[in-house]
Image 1 (cartoon, rainbow, N blue to C red):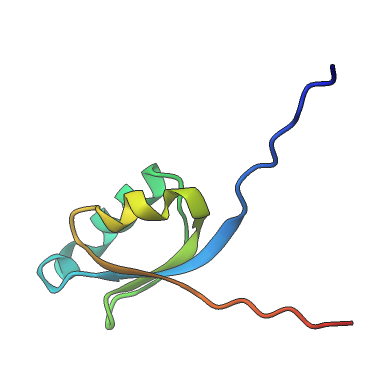
Image 2 (cartoon, rainbow, N blue to C red):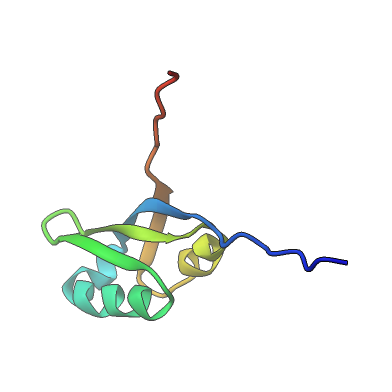
Length: 81
């Protein structure tokens, strides 16, 4: 019987809003997100937002991180051809 390969979980683009109480520590929050497997793309200090990509199955975990207010998936659009 052939072994069944499981496809890796696809990454999704996310916007992480940092809690007001942690905006002064935005770099530390970004470091924790990276240690959990998120690829941090940009940090928007003025708005307290971190943009990046993470495996969909890790969304629940990063939502619980200290200093994280919200995690939103960026919408993706695909053209029908």
